[in-house]
Amino acid sequence: MTNQNTPNPAGGRNVRGYGSGGVDTVISVDEVTRQVAAIAQEVSSERLDELCEGEPFVRIEKLRAGYGQMEILHEIDLRVGRKQSLCLIGPNGAGKSTVLHAIFGFNRIFSGSITVGQGDSALDVTRLSPSDKLARAGIAYILQDRSVFGGMTVEENLWMGGFLKNQPAEAKRAAEAVFDKYPRLAARRKHQAKVLSGGERRLLEISRALVMNPEVLLVDEPSIGLEPRFIDMVFEILNDLQHNEGKTIIMVEQNAKKGLEFADIGYVLVSGQLAIAGTGRELLENPKVGELFLGG
Image 1 (cartoon, rainbow, N blue to C red):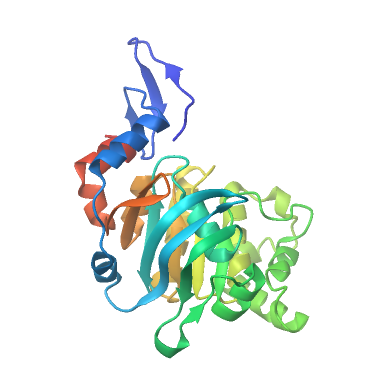
Image 2 (tube, rainbow, N blue to C red; image 1 turned 135 degrees about the horizontal axis):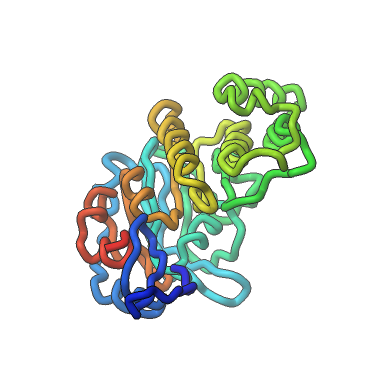
């Protein structure tokens, strides 16, 4: 949650929240954390399984993870089914991005497990490197922003997305499939990425991950820094990837309203623990979640 507060003429102060609306009273991150902790529920494994509507495709059990010697996540559980979407919301410092980092292998795992797949094909990926997770489990990470190579063309950026392909020709064929799917990128294939609009750069970031044909997309703040029209475009793309291409999506989204409207499942995290879990609709309709994260 932003701490940048600006005075208003009425004598109070406004702060931008997690939704699209404003609020009249400044609430600090510490206060949000306290209020979420106060409404936290006991979330059972059975409830998490129910939200999957089938066997979990990504499963996290009692995960403790962090950076260096600092533990951020405290025995987090997570379930998301194949072709489902999960949105993580919560105040700054709650551990949302740390969950994505742990799944992909960007941080330290102290204990617990992460598995991807179902039945006999389920793979324990807890200790695998990011490259192995991508190659063996089909996990791709779409970073927050500015991860494109500005001095490279759109085409070259897509080829970079296929660095684990066995043959360069295979990566190029995958890039052509992306151009077939997104004419907007095809029209700019020879342009340097630095001249793209914010929405086009985000599309390129997503498309670069698609070159490896992943099963699981980890999406960190898809709407960050984008104009509203581009935010809608990005969520339309993610909706297509989930429902038409069968991708499983786990996202962190600062615009909680948009994220929960999109996602099948929503989790509220606080202080590295799971506080509330439900369908996206259930969290949207929860008045306390609305007050804290949806702009009232």
